[in-house]
Length: 227
Image 1 (cartoon, one colour):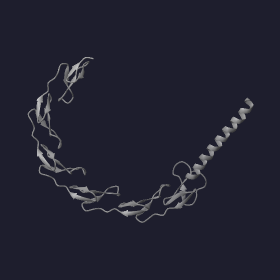
Image 2 (image 1 turned 180 degrees about the vertical axis):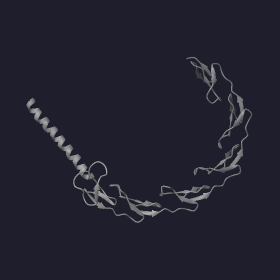
Image 3 (image 1 turned 90 degrees about the horizontal axis):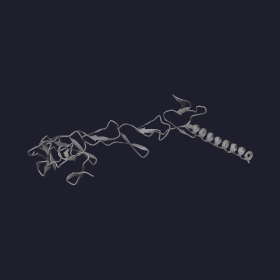
């Protein structure tokens, strides 16, 4: 039995190794990693094998010329289209179309899109002027309203209204929300700051406006108990 299985195992192993070498060598040939250097190719700058020159693509083991459309340029990659659109143009099917830049906008550094100038924000395909309300200022962000309220004011619709800070409260650097926060040891109750009552076995939390239980107590509703 052993004399029968051993030659069979050797045969299966040999067949596996042969198949693996066939696949590897086939892939190397498809990538241009082996064999003589064909026309319009060059030796790789690192490792072994060759690669197609700029303006040519690897096709069936050879380097075929790339048809570069108007307003595009050939790339050095050996895959994909082999070309990309020039700055100020965008891909549209197999062509490069000019990017239409609206008034009060500019071409981005990448060269494939546009952005509104400062004091303008994007609305659909154009740029409209940002209307800054009284007690507001232009924001650096191109998103949102395009403006923020000055310190001491908060955003209410399209206006900046003065923040009314209650006793035991202070102004916050935020244009949204109430615009104020209660001092440590107080908590917000409507438009006022009330003293925070601490139950037994508790201490102020990190915010200073609420409490946590002392160890080993745990919170249960409005008090701290042992479990």
